[in-house]
Image (spheres, protein in one colour):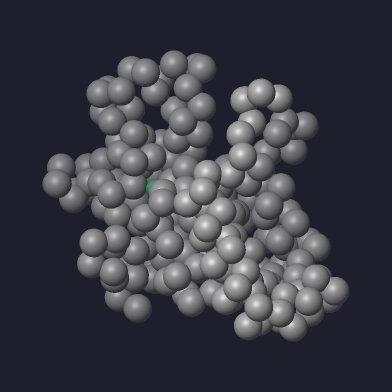
Length: 216
Ligand SMILES: [Zn+2]
């Protein structure tokens, strides 16, 4: 594997810093996590975007959150077709093995994936419409969301509206998974929708009745 290289020095240095501080000061906690396994209270589904700093926003320690990140924090509909479903696998494990009490879908401002969907839906991104585009086919999940917001918002508000709609679509699709649906029905699991503005540092929460987001 000649293409695999040693860790760049800047990362190795940061690792040694972490080992000497965070790890060494909390060694018992890490040992406990290792021996007793993980018992996270919540699963968080967020975007891959490097600016969405999930662990920092919630001050999370190791072992607290089961975090899954993908392009535009989406969840596909339940489709047991034998294909490779990374997001669905993470959800299945979180709900049926870890028995998390909460699943939080976290959307964000300036989302490139959502913008791509918007461009595709308005005919401005032919490359995303290619069948070979992984991003395009992934963002197809959000097309029904675009149809719901397309006539409701001014062009300058459309991106944020669709970012929030991506959270709603993900939550709706979560409920198509039988084990999610059952856990929700049995009051063993609650679902939550959030959207964060990266520049402002604000966090908004989805109100299930109005389908609007309010400040946390
Ligand atoms: Zn994003």
